[in-house]
Amino acid sequence: MNKLHDWPEPVIRVQSLSESGLKSIPERYIKPATDRPSLNVEEDPSNMDVNIPIIDLTGLSEDGNNLPQSTMDQISLACREWGFFQVVNHGVCPGFMDQVRETWRSFFHLPMEMKQAYANSPKTYEGYGSRLGIEKGAILDWSDYYYLHYLPLTLKDYNKWPAPPDSCREVIDEYGKELVKLGGRIMKVLSISLGLKEDRLQNAFGGDNFGACLRVNFYPKCPQPELALGLSSHSDPGGLTLLLTDHQVPGLQVRKDDKWITVKPAPHAFIVNIGDQIQ
Image (cartoon, rainbow, N blue to C red):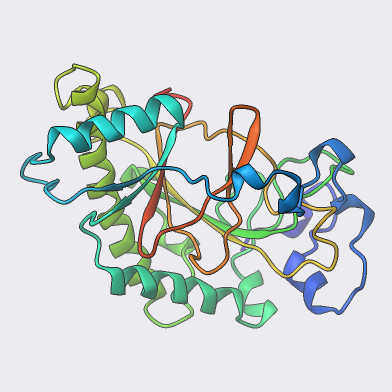
């Protein structure tokens, strides 16, 4: 178990704050005025019907790429204009995607003392966390999270993986395998769309010896959502991010043409984010 005092100040779980019944959030969760979310969609009604592209991957498999050229063109255009797109018919079982969501939801609703057994530290960030960075007095995000290394195998430590709820570790492992396969297929398509050999991007990230990690974000109910952010604006530093969202609660926003666009998740879709390294 990591020691909580590895952090520069006491770690407070955002879920505990939310469930305490407080009417206003602590000052350290209040974002500067320029960073606060806009909750009034009427301010820019032109954004209400805008969404990142949704792309059907029927025909894309581990054995080959049988995507029609029109789909390849859609992916290429989405990468150039958005850096984000959603994929459906991607090969991951919808029922399993639901199981993954429910497994993690069950973990975050375990008693606090059980979750604290997996508390992380700033040394690796692996485990159950509530903040990033060790700056004292930093303005924090309104969220808790769980972070794990999946690959390479030298970093894979099952002791950091939550044992409860039942079958949690098995679900995480299977989910990792499915996303590694899907990510590899998407990397091939991106390579081809750039006019490169299909294994070019995969090889650039180490071939079979690449890195993969998992982060699960939990956003508790906030009494003053107009003042806080679940996750501050950022770009992803890696090559490719595959995001499984709660499709009943839109929250992710992407930046395009100097506007923040709220993503409307398609049922059983993954959101693909082109990371800094590929960009």
